[in-house]
Image 1 (cartoon, rainbow, N blue to C red):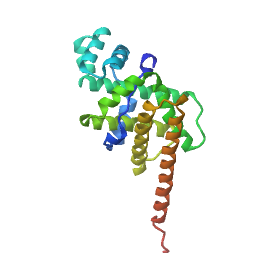
Image 2: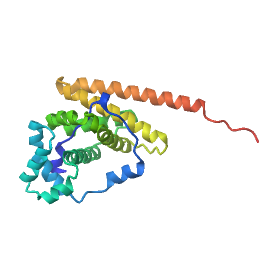
Image 3: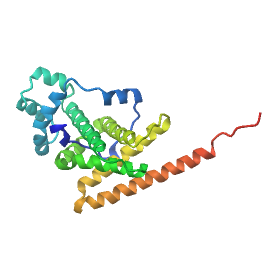
Image 4: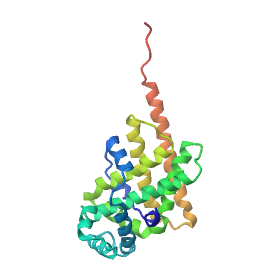
Length: 234
């Protein structure tokens, strides 16, 4: 990852309108490497200090491209939607950093611990860039950016669930990722405001959210089993 392993952002949970995305397109987005990867890396490296001071703006993107000596034609191709394209590159860089962090350590034995570990690893790779995260949150909570915020959260949730061993292909595929998207958004927002030592308050907040999710999953499984069709004798 190098320079790109140091950035990311999340939207405010109460403002994010969660939406569904097709698995085919979603998985394709995750596996395909952009021909502009080197451009994204160079521009993000130049842009992030500016973003920490001035927020996410098209003027910042243009200044970062100039600092990275990126030709205007390449800038238009690599960032067709301006700063929105830069934010997408920013999140994808953090998703790559998250995958590397998850792959470098041991896998907890229980699903509950795996999901908690995945969220904590996301916060860990984000931790040096809290000012950038706050700026991203302010950008993503704007109504016109809700769909993008939802898509970015859904993708990160997908990475964590796949790493945790989830192989769901039915409606559970979506419900698990949508619920974890909410946990990611809420926990990141809480973490950005947390001034406790070693973020112990965030750990407790995350634990409560995961406990709620697990309780819901148990209830869902119980209800499903009660309505499962029974075999009739021939």
